Image (cartoon, rainbow, N blue to C red):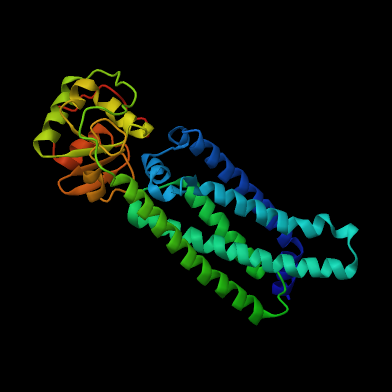
Length: 317
């Protein structure tokens, strides 16, 4: 009896709950989209792992932030969930019933696609990029919650039809996501693999204004000695942050590989061979480390045992 009462409560409030969650997701993804398009993603990231994710090639599709697609999906869910409630008084009984049924199947289709896409992106984040993005995790949880509420928040008259709808959408989404990211990554690789600029001509990033201390220079010399490489792009604000931590004198000793085809002394072939998901990236002792690294962390992973009296604090503690 209690279970029936509980389910009845969910059925009565499911549209409002779904609409509220989708509205929250819409605000979050719009916030991310604005930050990424304005080049301020570093400012909103509480961790370097967050930067790694938002600066990786997986964070955009054909140059468009995936958060923009997310905002469109959340906005659609909110509108579809709340439309029957808003239009309830202006529709006849039959029209209202048809809108209810159609809108639930639309919600099921979109929620399924969102949950599948979120699962794929979570796999990329944890297994490929190996960074932690709080915004991405929040969005994935919201998408999963929307899917669960859509499935269990409605009295489905034809369970077989709803199951088939969800399965078809899931298969199409899986195929679409793999195709889109395969095509997108191939495009990125093609861009990175353009002929390198071997002359000193090319674009440079902002001037490094920090001066190096003895510890920064000692660490840089050690990294050079063991063959460590720093992959960067002159357009990347996080790469600039990494260089500022060393200062201009220490940076001169580090093997800094420019990955942008239009950058000064570009070495795009080396970047392509390293199969980088994003920059900045360090290659130390045969392993890749993505994102801005503190000098203490670089000392730890490289085996440096000298002085660590570094001048500049790490910005993402």
